[in-house]
Image (cartoon, rainbow, N blue to C red; front, side):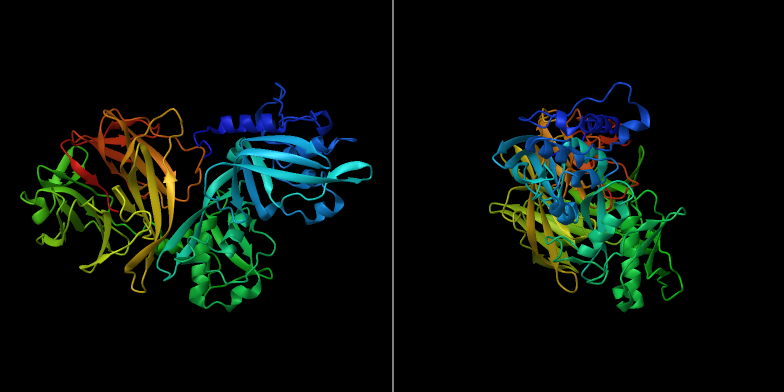
Length: 585
């Protein structure tokens, strides 16, 4: 996995040394692809621009292959220089938009008429920007050469952009494509990687037109019509309006369907810093909605937010055998049975309204539900064995996991009715913690498997009335620190930090705990993300949700609440003596 803790200055420094390379005729004829350090007098904004040289006269086949790799790292991104290394036929047919290969090192050797490029630490990204899951690999490319006008040229390049890790970290960023779930009730995010710059918005729209990746296609779809084409690219005006020119297929949508298409576009494109509004155009004319508007913003689709419309950021916890709200150093018992002593609880969940509480008894055998506002009595909703902390999803489903002699058994309670949900890779395993994604579409579980921490994520399939039926397409995510020297240990707890990123609490040894971030598709995430410092203590609960306005917190075995500050350090956050502190799911 690509190391993610890289500062902007560091990434650009690596990029500078990568791209300020001498002409191909000066490259050695064997061994790895060497990159020279930048001249010391190159400073400031000049460091971010690179216009690769063309092939040198009389360059060898190895030099042509190496020059081709260097030329693909033009900044701003441009493939004109790279095409100069190709035969006339290949230059016309090469499609670098077919995907991206990211590699750590490259070595080029010659085998007859072929230049062999061996890439190590390589990962693939498909044409839509989706990171292809799996460990880093070795990839071998065989570039056949032909003579044209007395010069060697590549005749069969792979239809992909091929760049090294430092260039990728400096020039590409993770974005979300927002699709709708099958019932059009919530936006479902999918992580993609796109180059930063003028082409970002167009790249994201083409991703939407491609539709969700196969793993998510069973639960999500694009609101844009099948067959629609971007014609030719998105233009962002000086006023921040992203004009999306689409083929006339969009005219076949009903007014409501057009609204959904614009919401999908607005949520996706407003991640681009220069965009604050979105409009669709057809043959140069803005597409008007039923109310006459032509522009949409992300706020127009708030009711479809993948984090839901939570009405509370309240923190609740168990203290002195009662459920209390926590505000700084102050705590107040909630209304009703949960605010009174006697239930003997060990964990709880709060729904997004801030009213409904589900709690598990101290012995892990019972689950109770009740209202935290009107004082209604708590009622028993489940009896089982070794219940983990409960969760309440966007659709009101209560999720419970039993730890039994046969491994984990996953239950979904809908309107009081219990359903056992089989989740491949999770059911029957030794599950230590779990969380349901904010949009209710993915179930993540921490698995105890020897000394190596592991998180498995399943897609949740639902019936027409949104009752969970089963899981599918499990992904096993190795949990690793940005610093490979850091030990992690077993997964203690986890939760969704963003709609696509999990915070995972691990305990490498007694007296030390660590929190690391994992993207739910196994991709590297934002290289500028700072890993939290080690927590000096035994943390037992992670306090997190996907609302950007909430802090990441934890509770240690002494009942102390700690908050993560902006520098990645832990600081006391208020009341002590807490058990199982939680925010709304």
